[in-house]
Image (cartoon, rainbow over all chains, first blue to last red; front, side):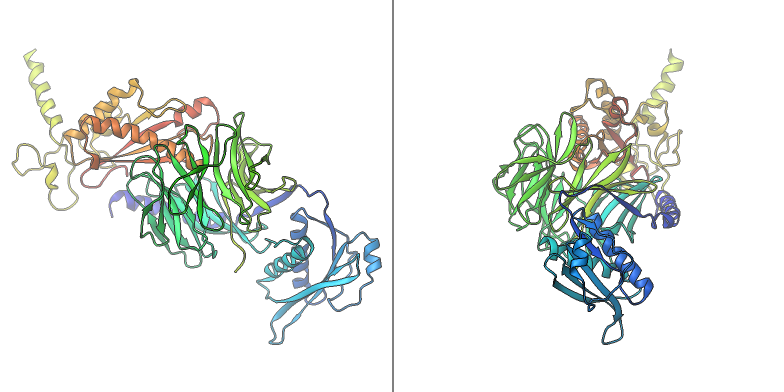
Length: 426
Length: 180
C-alpha cells in the first residue's frame, strides 16, 4: 500500500467514525398537497400493551394521512378491540366512511400479535381483518402492514407503507448512501464515502443496491448486498461505468460504458460477467431502464441531435423514439404497472417532472419547480419520488401520478438526492 | 552568450531524460532507464513533491502544473487557447512513456446527472484525442467523467458554471505514485 492510500484510508476511517452520528439522521416528511376526495377514516385506540398500541395506531394513522388519500376522523380517545360490537350509525354521523378497531394480544405460541378489523361505516359491515405477529422492535412494521391492508381495501390498490427508499445524503463533505422506511424512519447507512455516489438501483428482491461510486476517482458500478455489507464491482472498464438498471428477473443489469468511445448501452449478468453491447449509435446513449415486462429498455439518447427518450428491445436492435415535445427529455422511468412513463423535461430552462400515458402518448407536466431530477416510481405506480431543490437545499419530493398529492422529504443537516423507491416487502 | 548556452543545453538534456522518482524498494522499473543505458536511475535536481510526482508537473511556475482545460456551454472541443497547454502535456508524455494520465471531464450542474456524466466524458475524450494526435500512446491515457459531481465552484451562476465545464489532467508516475 503506498503512502497516498495509507493517508486516504486513515482519513476515510476518521470520517466513518464521525459519520456514526450522521447515520442517525432522520428523513422528515411533510405533506404539501392532498388528494381531491379523501376518504374519512377513524382508527380507534387498540386495547392491550399500551406502548405497543400507541406505536402501532400512531403508525397506521400517520401512514394513511400521509398518503394524501385519507382524512382522519377524530376517534375521541375511544379504544375497543376487533370483536367489539360497533355502533356504525354513530361513526357515520361523525363523518367516517370506515373504521378500524383492534387489539394487541398474544398469538397461540405466545408471541406479541396485533389484530384488527376494518368496517365500512356507511354499509355497517366488516370488510375483513388480519392478525400480524410482531414484537417490540417490529411495532412500526406491524402498523405499516395494517395501513397497507386498510389502504388496499378502501382504494383497490396495493399500499406501499411497508416499502423502503434509498437515497444519497451529501453532508459535511461526505456522501452517505442511506435506506429508510418509506415514512422516513429507521434510516440506516449502507455506504459512507468521501467521494460522490449516484444512481442507486434496488434489485427486484430488495436485497441489493447497485450504484455508481467515484471512490476510485472515476465512475465504477458496484452491487452491494445490504444485509452483509459485501459488495462486488460489476463494471470497471476503461473509461466511465454508470447508470445501472436491474432487469425485472434480477439476473442482469443494463449499464452505460464509455470504453468504446461515447456512452453506449450494454448488459451484464448481476455478477459482472457476460458483457453484451445493446446500442450502437453515434451519440450518447444512457439512463437505461427496463420496461416492467422486461422485454424492452427505455433510454436517453442524443443521437437525433438533442437528448430524447427512446425504446429498444432488451437484446438490442432498432430503437424507437418516444418523446417529441421540446429539446430536452431525459431520465425515463417506466411505471411498474406498464401504463405510463415518468421522465424529466426541460421547459423554458426549467427541469420538471412529466408523465406520459403510454397508450395515448399524452404528456402531463406534474411539477411547478425548476430543478427536478431522478424520478422513481413507488411499486404501486401511484407515487413518484424525485430529487429537487428548495431554498438552495437538495430535498426529495413525492408526487402522485395525477399531480395532486405532494410530500416533501428533507434531512436535517445536508442535501438529499438520488432517490430510489424499493420493491414491495418480501 | 556561450556561458548561458552550456547550462541551457545541459538543462535541456536533463529535461529530455525521463525523470525517474526514487523507487521505494527494488530497482528502477525498466522503462524509466535513462537513454545513457548505464543502468543507473537518473533523478532530476528538482526532485519530487509529496505526491511522488516530479516538480516539473507540480511547481506552480511550471506550465505542466496547469491541468485544467475549460469549455464553453454545450461545447466539447478543445478551444484554440488551450492547444499550447495540451501540446506541452503531450510533449512530456511522449518523452516520459512510463507516466500515465487520467483525464476527468466535468460539466456544470444543470440537467440529468447521468446525461451530464456522458457529456463530461466527451470533454475528456476531446483532450485525449488531442493528446493521441500529438503522439501520446493510447495506453498512457484513461478518459473518464465526473459529470456534475465534483464542481470546482459550488456556485449557481454562470461564473461558477463556466469554471465547472472543464477537463482535468491527473498524473501517475511509473512507480504508481501520483494523483490517482
